[in-house]
Image 1 (cartoon, rainbow, N blue to C red):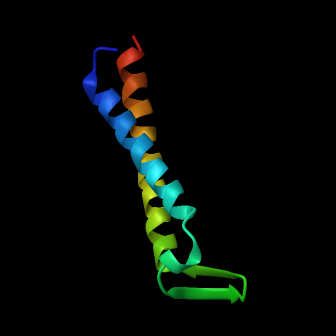
Image 2 (cartoon, rainbow, N blue to C red):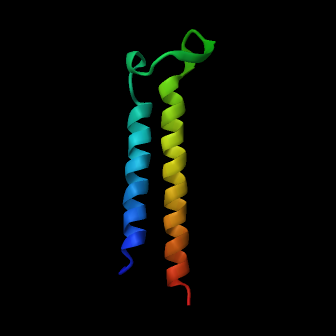
Image 3 (cartoon, one colour):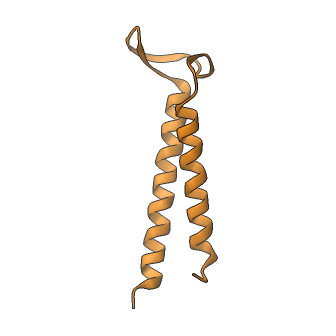
Length: 75
């Protein structure tokens, strides 16, 4: 557990994932303009693209932290 890089990457991944999920829960007035409308009740907005990016980057950072931890733990 002495490697601070793994802990910092894990914390960064957690914050990125949480930020993406909180942005996903925003009501429609805060989500910006409509980029693609599937039907009157469902659409993709500008904030949806940003939150998808945050969740994707958070997942990649979490994967990287796990990979680094596994590399450190393997004999």
